[in-house]
Image 1: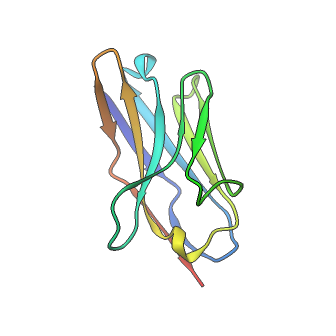
Image 2 (image 1 turned 30 degrees about the vertical axis):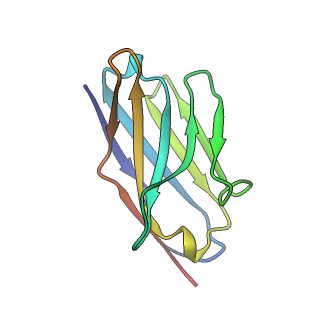
Length: 117
């Protein structure tokens, strides 16, 4: 099993920066891919950014150049540095982890990011 806990959300103004942190516990050594998803008001959950165990990254077009995903294997953490935030970035942000060895994925409970105009 893997447990994920997000932190770092809050209320900011457009143009501000925010850093989200996901802390993993449990069977973390077998985590392959980790990712951030978000779900805005009235929207479906969407992929924001992902990172593989060897550091390969992928970003949604809407956040490219503004958001940076990173991972610290020693601390079992993943971060999302969000710069130049826009009101449309307002959403609940979820941490996700995959363990391909058991073909399972895990979710955190989410952290709310609100960007005011």
